[in-house]
Length: 97
Image 1 (cartoon, one colour):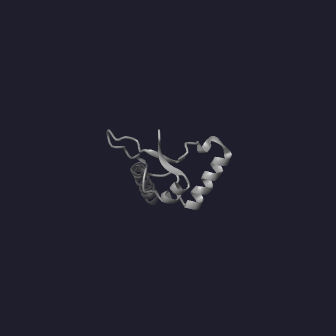
Image 2: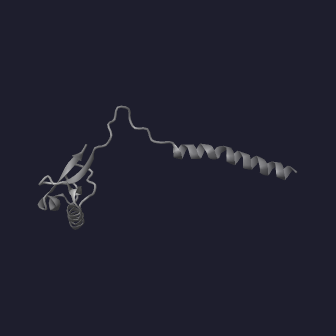
Image 3: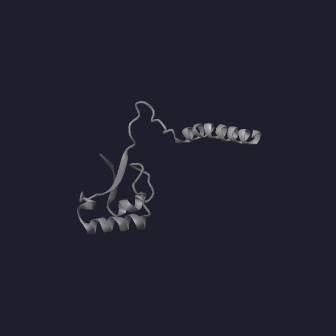
């Protein structure tokens, strides 16, 4: 009987602390007070045609992004991977509003 009581005690002690471990891992990270949401960027055509306006423009943009190994979606307005190649093909990075 003493062994059974020890086993139950160990089991209960282990289970009581599992909630602490799970809570520590699953707590969401709070955004600093007053921080703005991150800006979002996208590739756009220099001739002002919407890439999504036609399947042909969409297919061409996807091919250009792949060939230029361009970052998609771009993380910044300038200095993203593939930007020089995409500029040569008539694209620029724009802020998504």
